[in-house]
Image (cartoon, rainbow, N blue to C red):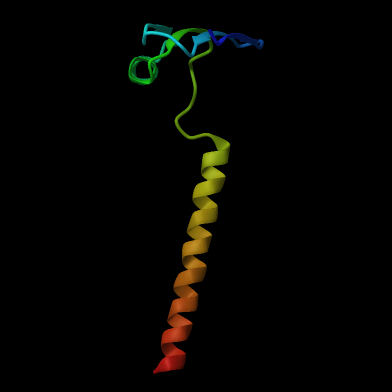
Length: 94
């Protein structure tokens, strides 16, 4: 049977994952984020593998992370550029 156990520990968190690919869809998931628990449980159940996952530590994360803010700003600049290019093309055609 193909199995794996992985552990990741940082100063803020500790994550332990046990996975058996040829399983029965059994799961024991405790991340502290109920929606994430639910989604991982569904993947294990419908994927037919056994998953045990526990995550402890800092769950206090902000909803807007710096990378997300940069991505939004970049997307806004791209939209502005394409709008200007479209307006310029429309003027050239008319």
